[in-house]
Length: 175
Length: 285
Image (tube, rainbow over the protein chains, first blue to last red):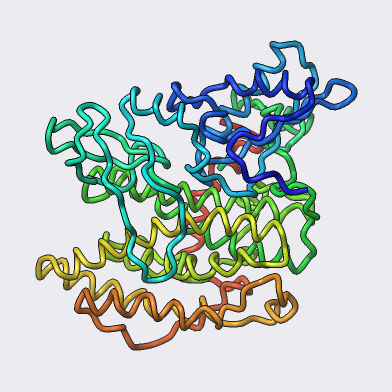
């Protein structure tokens, strides 16, 4: 079985939906304004006949240590809601992409001071030049910004500065 | 390498003499990275071990730079690149170990040099910053071409790991190219060091593209290393030309990493990587 490549694969059956809605409230430990549902990290929730819950999460970046915190938080949240038997699986396919981030999530990021990803994910063929759309400053909305470092405070972010308000800011890279 | 460990509580308690409180995470990640995928056959597990060891050894080396790079942004960049590669290593070793019932931690911490299957490039010393950049330049371009093709593997787990990894390695490739250009076209000293570093690392390029008997047995699953060579050259030659550098010539290392023959470098890398796990078996942190 391959999981669907959609941003928010909320289950259709009532029991699983209830559990999904609990798991969906868990936030990213590094970017606490985003839930794992906003991020697109929550891939599936299924409640079996005996009430056992199986959750699938996918990592944003392969080495992201936040995944383990999210896994523990999902387990705690579901146990607190009365589900005794909870298992959380890690899935890699389909590979996570920033295209799954919700519009609401992007707005929350911007408000939090992190520029949301601009444009869509694609892997360049060998030799192709990376096309970078202008990144908007989350403080003053200027497009007159520049990249200081492609690798930032976490795997998913780059460091930018605004040439109008002169403030540095994080940018959530397209992946 | 990871906060989780499959050691059971009883085994763990046996080791817990004078080492303080040792705790094993009760929730482990699932054994499957791809839903419904099967356990790797012996040959596929061996191939996953090759790729996993390449990623693990270079990840361990890149971690050394944190707090030592020429600027703070580079501490962060090399740390992040290392973390991505460690993620790839975890997935690959997790898959490689399932066949023999060994966890990714078990494979990382409880094997010695002859059991490692990494190519010699990855164990070359960090050297000065230019050496690390030259190693990254070769590694990232090789890995990019490899993972691009491995996405079409008949093995669903390898294809999924490749699809995940290729997007990250694409960023690593860019990073190395920017530095190759900056160092080679920078000062006389930075150029001198970049040229030295490239010629020191180039002997280890050949081994990456050597076909081993295992590859013949994995038609449609593994990527034939020799088939990557043209694409690798096509990608790096223009960069070196722009950097006004020549493709180095000279001796070619005899290789042997896939068969467990390594240089003395690997022992030092493993000693540092494994010491804590071996001093406190079963610990998690």
